[in-house]
Length: 226
Image 1: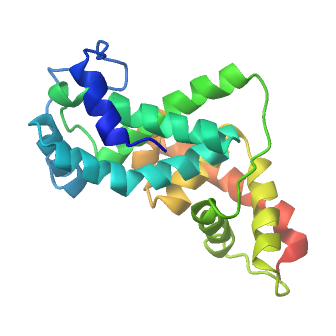
Image 2: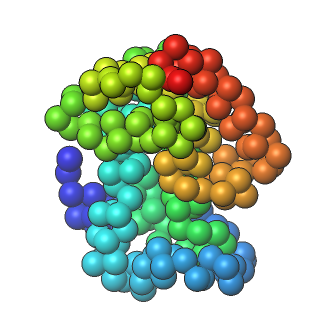
């Protein structure tokens, strides 16, 4: 994958910086005291002040996680990598007007959510997720966590690839919104309030999405669990 930090800096230097998007905070918004306690927000504030190393650190921390989430959402590893790069390009372009009104991860995944929604509309139909096992270790780990964190344990000793495939198939039966809510809550550790802000829903709606997703996963994985 291309160096996102270098690409972002180069494009910015060339003037490829469009106006503020819906995911960027308005200049009259006030910083949140809670957000300011987030170490990743502090890194982004350094980026705002021109620290390229801080931006590279954010990319290193979140790039792999973004690719995994995008892969599940759009069903194509190559497209997921492109969307991850575009997410960070948008973050970099927004740096000078950045105001920390939420945790950095909430802001980042809101941008990612909007990009994934646009990409899915462009694809026109749902594609099957196919990940090269040599490149998809992060995805495989996430899928195994879907079983462990849902309280579902294999009823027999599955081969790692077999279990990964069964869980992948179960995840793919979820709606796009259920899948994103599961990824953010179970894999990124986001509380309901942060997921709600990311997805522009109420916390009650997020709770309902996750409840339905758990039931769907349980029904699909029931033959393989105790």
